[in-house]
Image 1 (cartoon, rainbow, N blue to C red):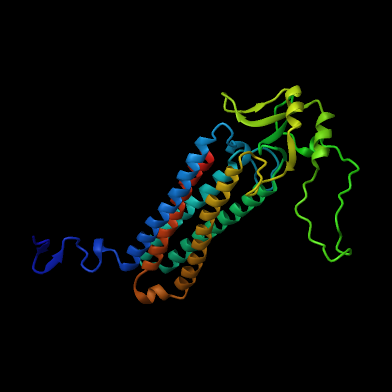
Image 2 (cartoon, rainbow, N blue to C red):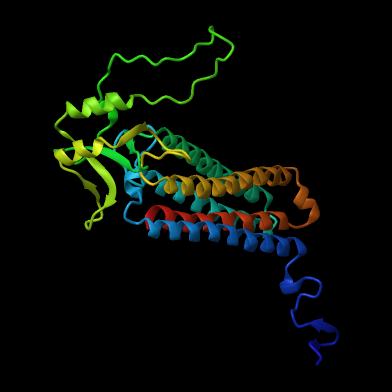
Length: 324
């Protein structure tokens, strides 16, 4: 059966001839990349969803983890993450304006909007780096049991988190270790917590106003706080002090939470960083008049597709990882 339509000359039913759907080869390849990358992010988010609901009773509460804002001390749940999201979405708006200005061959406006897009992306990447550093460093500290569970501390009167420094004792302990000046078997000592397990335990026993909060979430959607007697009994199962989070230990709760945080936000952050670098290259080409001489700004449009995809992915990450 003939699949072409003749109107004076033979044309493809796609209407694009050598450019299907009227899209250039470069645009088509960008769309292929976006679709394949979307499947990768989908795999991450689906895996996160399965793990989240499998361990829903002990999964960390995002509002209690992401509470920090640069240069401000206090409890600001999700404020800074919302700010990061707003900045990234606004950078997508400026990218749309840059593409539109490119269609109208307005070089100065393309330069302006591309510059604003780069600034927005750089702020987001810097904010994510700060969030990582804060997450890794930790804030309050906790105890890990022999079974790998995390025990956090709260004030009995207010129910607010208590930092290890609020009640831990400083004991006259000395860590036996080699020093650089002694022997050929000297090795750099690994990470050392602010307080030893013994100092935390003794400080807790001497502080009746401190209670233990477990990972288990109760019917009210809050973590279970133990009585003083239950707390003292639970502390006998303690194995080590944990401060901050990494791929092995996590003071906020389940280790899987930290694993997914690093992999999902890190993978997305790499995409944003790559986009900023590409945008900078395109930005200087615009200034040099490269696309004016070509007679079109299709390269801006192609990198714009990538940037919109990165922004859209973050909307899903923000929704499913931080909000749900």
